[in-house]
Length: 110
Image 1 (spheres, rainbow, N blue to C red):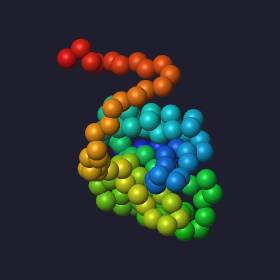
Image 2: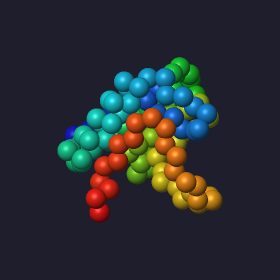
Image 3: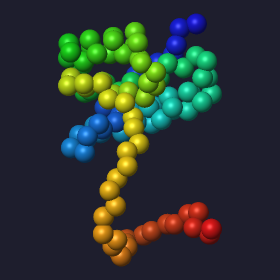
Image 4: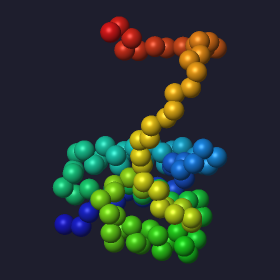
């Protein structure tokens, strides 16, 4: 059986300056991540496409679908193909938490 891929457009941001123009697509992207758990034997992955699919992005998409390189959460952009990663963040100076508005804390009972 061929792998199942979930394609979205504008569902994820790959850099701090990039917006998410289609929040409803983000829900579909999340559904794809759940499908990966339900059907791991059929799952290809999720691929987010840019707002406008130019020729370069289309070539990158074809390359990803032909050989995802073990990745299953990707974002195709004209500049590159991005994979989801966890990255260490430098800890800064501790600051006192000063919330504004309504705050709901869950799981804080230890």
